[in-house]
Amino acid sequence: KAGVTQTPRYLIKTRGQQVTLSCSPISGHRSVSWYQQTPGQGLQFLFEYFSETQRNKGNFPGRFSGRQFSNSRSEMNVSTLELGDSALYLCASSLDWLAGGYEQYFGPGTRLTVT
Amino acid sequence: SQQGEEDPQALSIQEGENATMNCSYKTSINNLQWYRQNSGRGLVHLILIRSNEREKHSGRLRVTLDTSKKSSSLLITASRAADTASYFCATEGLNTDKLIFGTGTRLQVFP
Image (tube, rainbow over all chains, first blue to last red; front, top):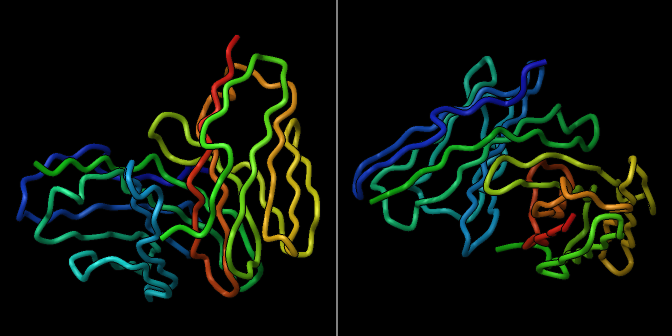
């Protein structure tokens, strides 16, 4: 079974621009979560999607948004990029948690650098 | 903000020795998970322990959970150089897939 894939793997953008990152979950996984990892703040939860609905959201400004499609693929968008948005963005998928807690499977991440 | 604190922040040991990492968290959980990350790459799931479990084993890994103290420990026995990585605990709250990560422990295993 193919793992979680994220595209692109590396991205360099300029302040003020916007960016869209993509995540394809493991086949059969319906829950997709996004995390931001920085040296200063560590791993922080951005949002979680299940069946095209945002189920949870972390403490990030409205510039960070996401969506999930009917095939469970997910995208996250960051508008008006700031230098502090430079980070590794990780996507994770898991089975439906309603049936119990399941481990999350992480993709390799997208390394975003804002200059 | 992060849920958990991990201790120690960094650990250096020789191959063959055991490595123990501790994690403390703040709120009620559904389960606690441990992940490994190699040098800025994606996280690899190691083990999940549910709130009604006290101990779990997987290969060279042993995890304990004490919900009364809101703490967990990860023991890696007979460590290898390939175990060099950062290790994170993550708690999953009730009725959510949201994971709250700890600060991580950087483990270095010298051959």
